[in-house]
Picture 1 (cartoon, helix red, strand yellow):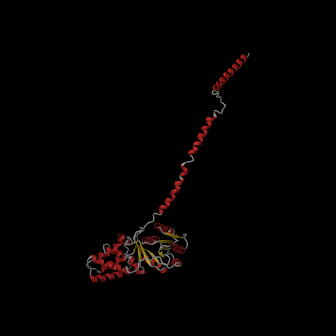
Picture 2 (tube, rainbow, N blue to C red):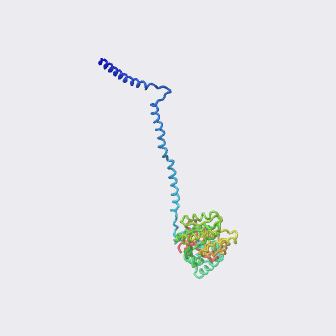
Picture 3 (cartoon, rainbow, N blue to C red):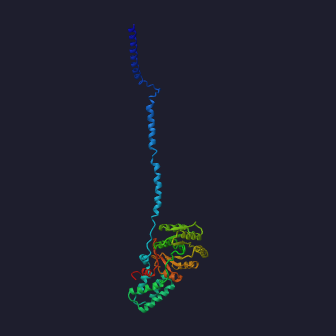
Length: 402
């Protein structure tokens, strides 16, 4: 009986094992086929879920580092170099020593009136009265002036009478001596631009608008810098549009500061502030550009007088330079007289002498005004302003070697 029970249990175990092996195989074969249209299973989601995040995550990894955000940085960095480029552009003006000789070719364009014409006449064997009249006409045409011409011709006639007319070189030497004498070479033509008493020298620049006053003021600054001076500009011509801007541009080119005020402001206030600033920074010379309106002589006198009085609260004005346009001839002398009545003019700067055949205006200015010509402008270049040297000037007018 016991054997029967054991056999039954063994049979049951074998049947159960067989069923366990058959059922999983049946389930594995049945699971793949059920692709029912509306049903979703957890096995279908995993392939889809990782694919979506993988595509969503890749673009953020690339887009956070676009070139767009880095582009502004180089653009911002480019601005400072542009500003810095202007600083190295500070110019070193040409030395003034011998500058008049170097510019001789330009000045020699004027020799057709004072040089060639006079030498041709004076070298004739016999000078008749008509010849002397021709000489007078040449000198007057060169803006020497009637009075100065009469004196010059008389001296020449006396020399020719005593010495006689010989070779052209001898006649040229006689003429050169008389012209140099007419230019009064003993006059003091130095510029008083040395600082003293703990303050800079003050130079006022006056003249009518249109004579190149502001431009010449900038060139005077270059002359001083070329001679080793430090300069500060005062833009006290507040009535002419862009005058201050023009002067500031001249200053920037040589590294000089410009003190300016509002357009239409008080010129005396600007001049005062310029000298004050010059004392603070310790420059050698303060150059003050003033207004040049001539509509009303009384108004001009009041304006320039006020500027000078206010500036002199710091100390006396060392130089007052009058800018004259050489091409205006005798009319320029009338304008000059107005300024000499208003302020104490200490020197004259003659501009636009190149190629005008009007070099004799230098003689007329000194004779009529009794004021030395200290600087002459021989062109439009920034360094075409030269200290006036009578002997070199005459050599250039006559041409050839003295």
